Image: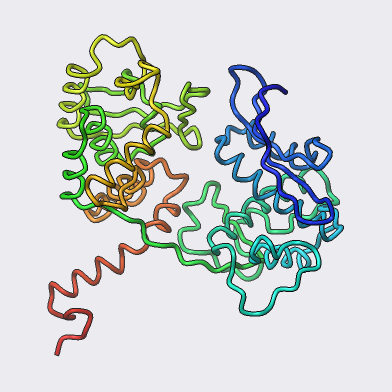
Length: 387
């Protein structure tokens, strides 16, 4: 393996040391991640699992996130003297209690008084639980001595005949059941008003940047999908944006889940594209729609770092501090759902794995929209019952 970057180490007493290490198998190959121990060698069980994820086409961001989650798990295993193959469910629950501690209090022998604030949000703990569940499912399939501690993908709950709402939307009719419950309330996604979108575009000094915001607002693309667009992906005649999965983009832009799709958009969006091409892009020899045009390296595709700088500038100029590319995506989805576009269609347009994902993210719309109907009917008034 070549192209190693500096590892990020965690040292928590007694010489315990694990690191997440970024790597590249070849000079032009994809980026991946692994976890190394104090001896500088990869942790075999983690390496096998992360390699499996990469082979299945998981994004580098997903592999990186799982690497950090499993690094924490192996730090805890080292402290407790446990082999991951011998961990039992009642003991595994202690790992999540350990994660709730502030990092300095995770060292061996540290006593934490009751009432100390939780270090991680429950949503973060849920993500770590999902990483562990996948890790154990992978090894349970390969080794009968390894239990699938956090549950398998099941057709129904393990007891009774109850099937959760929207279970039919899961791929293969399977739902994930976990015996360790971590309750968490998803925060409603932040959206932008039509006026705010216009203010943001007006604050842009470049047609390229105005077109980027208009594209995100009109298509719901993830920013990585937008940065990976080629000119051939824009079908002006049909009014379509084609999301095409590609490996090894120069700017590391990637379609999540490598799931391609076609998104119809308004004709006005292509008017902005044409103006951008004519006035700024010109004769530049570059396949990417969004390229560096105003500073070196001229002609290279825009990166997430370039977009982050743009977002910061626009937030300062407009005062719209909740603006982000993902806020544009949430705005697009909210607009479709309030226009009563079927949730299955919205899920496909967003590139979600299933309509259940869409329903979970935008479940708050039901309450807000019901409130709007009741207010317009005079049933409630300013949150109080009408009399």
